[in-house]
Image (cartoon, rainbow, N blue to C red; front, side, top):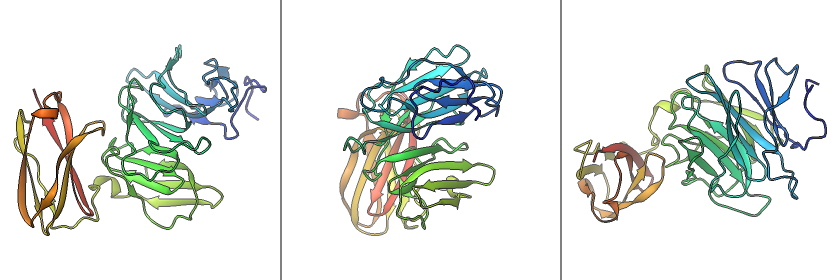
Length: 333
């Protein structure tokens, strides 16, 4: 096959990853325990890294996922994940690899996705099935892996195997896992099951065809499935909400040191109002109490545990039974 230049004796995963440069189809990347690159459509390969794994340490010690993207200066930025919990980033032409594993859990990294619209944004999915580990199956970085945030939110506690970022909206993500396909429209604060009709089988890979807005899911031995996403990414994450519920935009906005958040509810029930930062990290509950049907408001001020919040974009999320809605607000100090 087209493997000239790749060392046949290299350790490689049973599912060896290959990634294509988004602007030049002749530029490809291939992962064993090190990363190879071709500029001529796989006629010739050259190693552009040393061993990016923890070594042959009882695991396979192989690269499992690659994501190639372009920077504003047209340099190629490449993210690499391994089966022994390592994450790296390198930039052409030198590819001086930087270890960005940080505080990610020591688990099998199943997929990595650099946001098509912003190469500084990167997402990784994890699986702990072979170590009996659970929780926190997807992480996000907005600074090329310098810091990671858990955006697992309300996802079920199962391995995730694939992640896709919507090229048109970096708040929209799709993940495939052992319990099917899920999506978020607010960067992981809330996740919902995507569509219906998938077999009861793990989804091992996702691919998105942007021109036709079709998402393709590959299952474990149960064939391929596709879903039409037309219109989905342009709606709020609450298409199933009761129309008579209403969360209003805070006022004033921008604000400092206080702002008013108002909502309308058609029935008596418990209201949970939660604050997140722009990375999806929970900063705390603002409210968690029962309210009568009608219109209500809450004054949020920068006192107590919120007094040290820095300037920036924040997300306030209201939940009442099945109704969930989120809005953004801007704090300027």
